[in-house]
Amino acid sequence: QVQLVESGGGLVQPGGSLRLSCSASGFTLDYSAIGWFRQVPGKEREGVSCISSSDANTYYLNSVKGRFTIFRDNAKNTVYLQMNSLKPEDTAVYYCAARRLGYCSENGFRYEYWGQGTQVTVSS
Image (tube, rainbow, N blue to C red; front, side, top):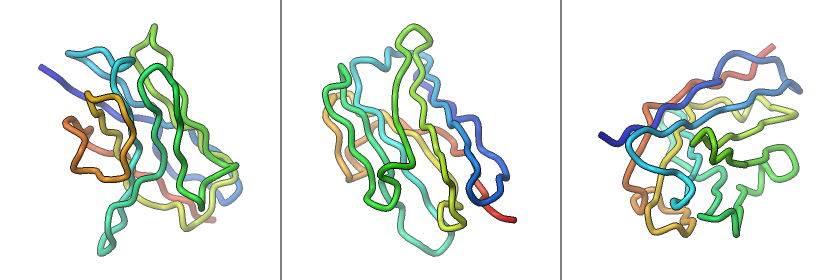
């Protein structure tokens, strides 16, 4: 059974950091593109970051460039999203998703597998 599980969310003050993890079971992540998306109630889901298979390419939403870093640890079958200098507008539920084709896409509908989401709240 294919499953993605996010962890690492929580409450952090503005300027703080969090590291989100996306761990997979039932398949190998390194052959897939892994995307991180976020959603706030009442707003559309947006793509935050993505890493393609073999780490050939990475993508970042303009508003997180220079603050977020996506990377993977194939030995742990896990992809991480390091989030620094967090802002209140980063508050959302963050989801990881896997696309077997291996190429990143901003369109969430191109991803076959999704995690359950983890809440990130940036507030003083």
